[in-house]
Length: 182
Image (cartoon, rainbow, N blue to C red; front, side, top):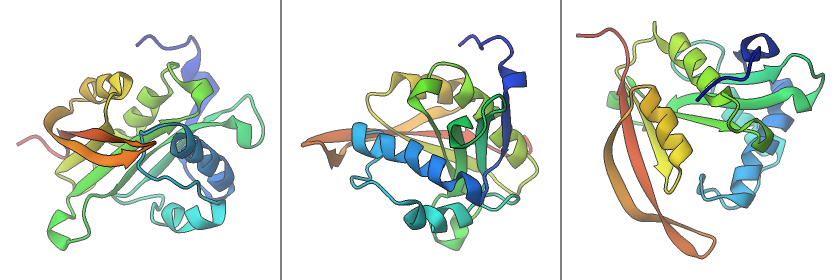
């Protein structure tokens, strides 16, 4: 996907902070209300999302990175975010993370997701991590292309695993190695 000229000077990627919470919640709620890309069905308040924000510190394997348009002041400057989160709660899964990226509808197709993932995987390079996983509700060709571009490979699909908007949706799972190459 070609980048918008000047994207890297217009957009800064940085750790998410409490001041971003309203904008991040608005972005996520768009996908809750309008799409089957998340299986949450009820929009969140920023207060309800605070534990999620706090589960992503500035360092460590569970990160929250925000793309911000530096030409805009205020919540509208937040264009999207990427996260790495615990894959499963059991200790043996500690070296695996689930990753995701969400952008505002206005930022779609501008290379923001690519920029966020580049920054996220660079930040995770020195962490004690072995694999990244991404679940993609289907159909979602743009997300499949993004993940393949970052070296993810399809490892399986759960058929009709979630019900939203009165129908069942499949989720394809993708996997990417992390850490030093062995």
